[in-house]
Length: 275
Image 1 (cartoon, rainbow, N blue to C red):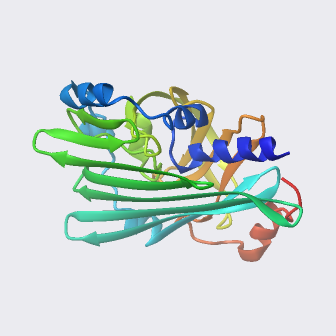
Image 2: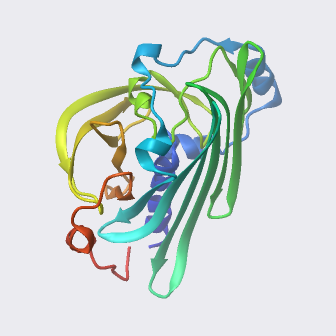
């Protein structure tokens, strides 16, 4: 049973922004100093999407000052994910907080905490920091613009990139136009191929909405995201290693509530005592 709970917890790393639980755990192994020095001396050639594929959005107008998802596994609510926005002129600060816990019987069997901060200047990311506490195992990843390069520091040491790329926090619709993104769990530059899957009707606590469905392939696998016509992030789902589905359900994502508590009751199942 403990192994099953640990597997579920590993899978939630993807929800916080990693390319896969397998990659996150692999990155827990310390790299040699020589490998870290080599990575730091080589500039990896990367690029964000072209400017015409980065929507110029105002997240405060799109979402309000906070974006909130409830996290479910096997019909049980196991956590919550919050994104807050604060603007100062052209500078935007995005704060992400995710708290998750899996209970078994009468005790807490697994906990996961994720905190991240992004700083944007106009359409460009200039800094990102993330902190992870995976049931006591702690990791920090930081990235920042440094002259002509983007410097990333993670568990394996330093990496130099030729440009900023989208971090894996999903609130910005432009991320699905990327071919390489920054994994905010392990500090890796992760190659992705998002595939458009059409329009789905998505249930949220603020009412139903039509949303474009994307499936990530490449190094970010078994992860699906949905954005409405305005570019709001309204849903996410991915597979745990035990085959169960982890689902992000929008509690507050900038949609006008039309059906209130009736909607909440229709899509929010009663909690169960076992994972």
